[in-house]
Image (tube, rainbow, N blue to C red; front, side, top):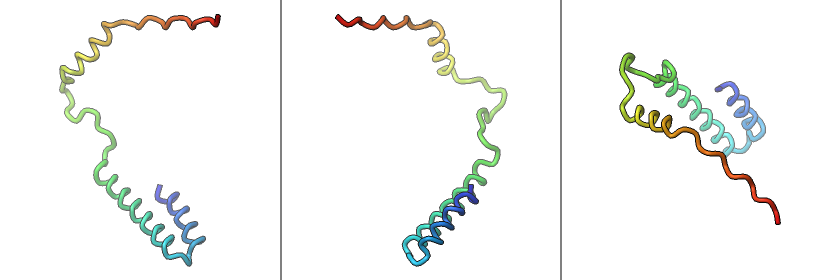
Amino acid sequence: MSEASMFFVNRVLKEHKDDKKHTEWAKSWSDILNALQKYVRQVHTTGLVWNSCPGTKPSTSIKQVSSSSASSGNAPPPPPPLLPP
């Protein structure tokens, strides 16, 4: 991701090298992406964790939702469209 962003940052720097506003923005954007990459690597080291405590059962509220949706069955089909007069 950082290589792709640096490609466009370098284009901005090349095209607007005399404009201080653009160069500051490009460097700030690069710093933000580097900080984001560092944060993701520190906090999300193993990827998503769906069950942090293996062997535990889901809460009862989840069971109630899944059982109530299964007992309701399928919804009836919609009525046919009205014919023009």
